[in-house]
Length: 313
Image 1 (cartoon, rainbow, N blue to C red):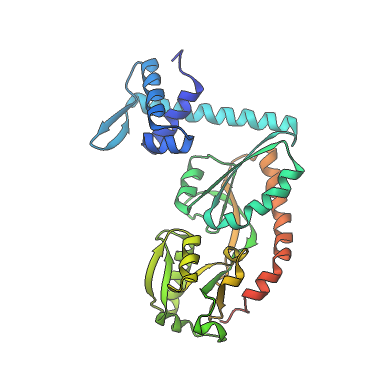
Image 2: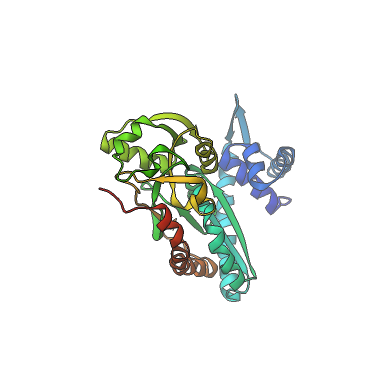
């Protein structure tokens, strides 16, 4: 192991965690041949095989499992050291690692900008991904804070709500129901419906309400992004339920239907594993976000008032 480098260990850890050279390459912004070469050199340094391939699956050998556990300890120690150094430097330098659910990309950059201006020496790493990938990243302790709308109930986490995330019914701008008030939720059964992909937090919330109210909708499309759904709605392919925050930049292109039981009231949460010690930088952003979210709500009150009607029970 004398010739092993920290870079090789990072490559190995990512490959072991994903059980895939390809996904490790994507995460580390490397080519797959580079990952393979680094693993080959590390294997030579160890003197024992680290991976074995059975069919199309990649598995760790016993030596690989031991090295994987050692890597996690090494990187945790390095992270603790970096945290102590950042504390010594105060907020003049440091790194903030954020992972946010896809819909949060509509407002988190607006809340990051002023923070970066306050602390120009801080480097920001922002990962935007889906709910399942967020949970995977949290399980592997890859980030300082996680922004999500659905707190995992099978993980020991600390969470803090900081912003409302109401789900509303989007329709094309000239939809026939756009002029009606207090629309019975059962009338959605007559509309072609566009759903987020299975596993989406938004989809789970919508399906829960529909099941509770005995509503069965005709799913015309399943799409994996809010932007794709909005384009489909604008193109007249159907209606959908999305977060109000997806409407911030183009409210004039859509109608918001005044349907009973909507909006579905949800919240955005700051989440991190329980027991995790936040760095001084992460703690500063945590406290900043609690305060900044209040101003954000006030600044966007005009959009909220123009697109949302009072909830009908």
